[in-house]
Length: 89
Image 1 (cartoon, rainbow, N blue to C red):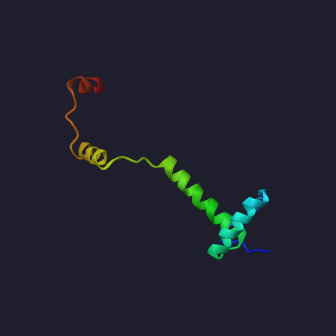
Image 2: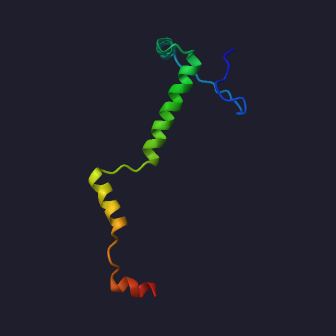
Image 3: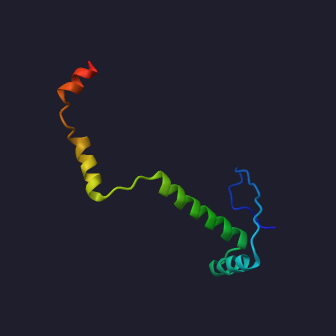
């Protein structure tokens, strides 16, 4: 049985994955090419994909010009309008 790669202080859980023969063979060939056991290849591939996905949905990406505009607005905020100042009083 394959040893879990998690630290000894982390709880390890098992998942079951069903796939067709062709998919399993493809994954096995890829795992062999990386010198990994199939389970480790599947785990590392899934973790990498999960990180990419979460990065895409949690990170805000802006162009260089927009980033510079935001920094400029932070460093040089506009003078508040009189109506805004009065509303805050």
